[in-house]
Image (cartoon, rainbow, N blue to C red; front, side, top):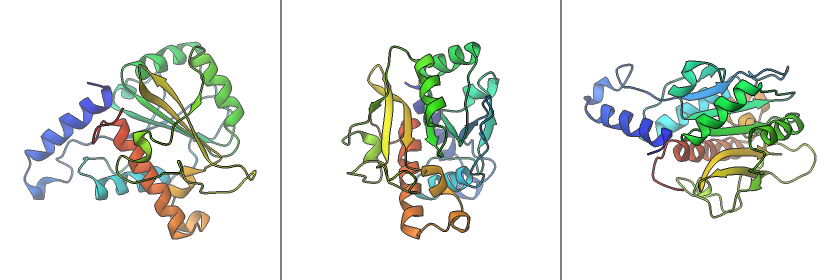
Length: 228
């Protein structure tokens, strides 16, 4: 059992033992970790994105989730209490040698890392991911992978939310022992799509597509509904 599926199994069992009116603060909840990284990039970007995604997960699945994400560094003990780690920003990202060791171990033990290029993160992330997994290059995730079909259908892959360079949105990944452990959304701005609609004034269809993709990602990360 992976780190993610263990968390969802524990929380779903705990939730099923509570009366319906007790599904508020008494229910054990899992959440998303927002990675606080060094290097000068704005790791805190898109402040309304993860609360909105968690709300969508709570409304559309029976996974008990917290109302907000937690900010974690790779050296924090709290890292081991999250199964889904989200990274975003517009600038430089840097991981120390110690952090690389910890992150690789966390991923190998079942953690799921989602990196969302918020336009400007690409070069530094590709540099750091090569340091993290020099033996596992980023590859495009095939369109028949469960992340595109687990709850919502995305036959064409990750949705395009914002235009920047006129390139198509792509989803890249790193597979460990057959499991998608790192998922990188490029030329997509998925996190922007999760934000309050008043922030970027995205059409409702774009906002909805982004949320649906995020629900798929989280569900996959925690082992909800199966998938490899």
